[in-house]
Length: 196
Ligand SMILES: Cc1cc2nc3c(=O)[nH]c(=O)nc-3n(C[C@H](O)[C@H](O)[C@H](O)COP(=O)(O)O)c2cc1C
Image (cartoon, rainbow, N blue to C red; front, top):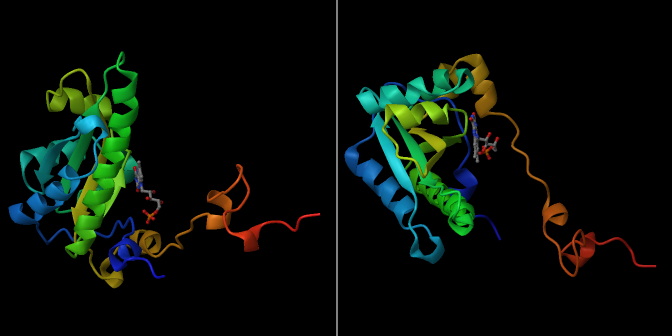
C-alpha cells in the first residue's frame, strides 16, 4: 500500500523562494487544518502567532531564530510560532497540551504540502525572547516555529541548502519500531528471530 502522496511528498526543506508570497486565504486554510486537529478533552490549548515576510511579526519571529535557522527560514513566505498551554500544577494539560501541539503541527504541515507549499518545523529559536516580544502570558509554552513557502529549483539554491534539501531521508524500519506480544518483538512474523 503506497503512502498518501501528501505524506510521501512532505519533507523539511530549506530552499525557500524569497520572491514568492503567501495569501491570507492560503494561511487561513493551513491554520484551519491545525485548528481541527484532535485535542485532549476538548481543551484546545494551541495558539499561533503568524507573520508574513515583510511584516513586523515576521521580522520579530525571524529575529528569535537560532543562527542555524535564521538564514534559510527568513526566506520563507510565512513564519508561524506555535504555542500550547503549560500550567505546572496541571500535569495532564502539560502532557497532552504538547501532544495537541504536535498533532496540530502535523496537520498544518500536511495541509501546506497539499496546497503545493513546503513547511519546515523548527525548535531552534529563543522561546524566552518570544515571551517578551509578543507579550505571551505566563502559562503558555512556545514550542515550535514553522517556516512555510515555496521552494526554488535546486540550481538556484546555495550549494549547502541544495545539499540539505537532497539529503537522504532515513527512518528506522517498522521491524524496529512496531512490536507485538512484547516490547522489541517485531509486529511482522517474517522479521522475528527463528524460535528454538
Ligand atoms: C520538534 C521539531 C523541531 C525541529 N527543529 C528543527 C530546527 O530547529 N531546524 C531544522 O532545520 N529542522 C528542524 N526540524 C526538522 C527535522 O530536522 C526534520 O523533521 C528531520 O530531519 C526529518 O526530516 P524530514 O522532516 O524531511 O522527514 C525539527 C523537527 C521537529 C519535529
